[in-house]
Amino acid sequence: MGTMISIYGVVYTTCHEVRKIYGKDCVDSLILRLSDENSSIREKNRAIWALGQFADKRALSKLQALYTGHILQEKEPIDQVSQYELSKAIKWCQEGNITSWLHRIINN
Image 1 (cartoon, helix red, strand yellow):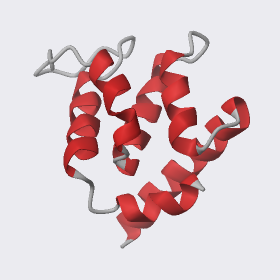
Image 2: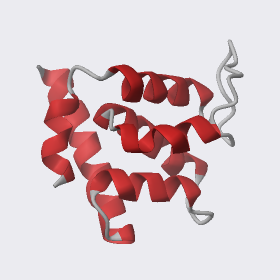
Image 3: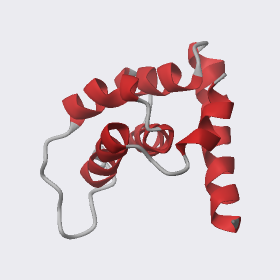
């Protein structure tokens, strides 16, 4: 239960941050962050992770466009969009995420 509350907190904070910047609902704002040249790689990776938590099909095409399919066995470089996080987010957007219902409360 503690892990779920922690994840919810990070998603909530990330959502609140992007909604202030982009003025859309959380999912649309997170998608916009992925195309924003002023966003850091770290911010984009956090957006990818949060989109996976939402498991919203609206994000699927943008996530797939960023996915190269080349996941390193070692630690990923910090100056690149995480292919590992993209693979998880894509899977969850396609198949669902057991806690996505919780995050939908944030989106509205």
